[in-house]
Length: 194
Length: 194
DNA sequence: CTAATCATGTACAATAGTGTCTGATTTAGC
DNA sequence: GCTAAATCAGACACTATTGTACATGATTAG
Image (cartoon, rainbow over all chains, first blue to last red; front, side):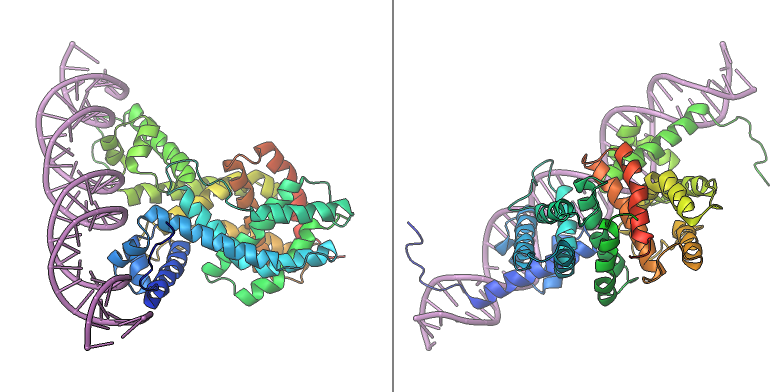
């Protein structure tokens, strides 16, 4: 078996269009979760039928998009050095990933109501696990406050990141400002109460 | 003018059904923003045509629902005593309103993508104005940290409340726990850094 | 240049939601 | 009990989206 004959290599514009479709899908769906495939195809600069040449259904497009975005997040997160103090690790993790994390979060929401029911359990590593691991370390060595459950602190962490992304989408905040205020806010969230 | 003859009073089951429809709409739309009018009518225990007897279109139902929910929020917020210390006022405001606030926030999101474009500017008082007024007072008297913009702190305030509501919807948090952890978290958000 | 691959446009069927109309039936106010 | 008001079920036209089929035109590797 194993592709007996690949008489021709994959055409270059094919992969280029495929990437354009995925990029356009991410952009459209984040802006408006109810975007149709026609909208996405138009935003990608291809015909609607071409989209079906690459993804056999809306469901498949969403699935591939979610997985590819999560893979980018994983790659980004894996490259962050978390060996320093919990505070430094927190800053590094947040500033390097808040943008992507909120995107994957939004896409996850789109899929949840696009799929019949259920499905969706975290594919690969849940980014939350990484955050909670860091939180556990900071709590263990006395850096972070421990009068609140770890799960709650994790939820607040993502709430802040997601909220910042929303503010940006609605034009009330710039990316630069978000990057500037997020670290200090997360510190306030986790430091011991006086 | 002014209803020349009201030969009959409004029938009681009519207003009862109207209320049931609004309640069901809030419940359905928060759970699934793409709920159809048929879903809502069924959840309210009435026929689909009866719904059209009360609201001439999906748009009108959403508008009335948003306004009525915001009116409840306004009433709830107006009854909160904010004259004490900024910290106490913050606790009171958050614990008495986080549930409703997140509901109105979700409905606002549903409407934004259901209306053609634009519209939607805050009807009546934006609940945010009330929060920002309190924030301004706490910043002025030195209670809250001032090394971050007021708008950012306001955004974080709503992010925490909205995030807590999301966690509850997904079953990872109970209402009791949310009420327990929210005040302490908001304090950490606003207190001076050490 | 050549030939296979891919993109394109149009057309079509199937499905789902919206909004309207009809007539029959039940309900509640007086 | 009478009567107006409100409900209900079913059917209809309209629109939008999804997914498929087919014939034609463009692109690119070799």
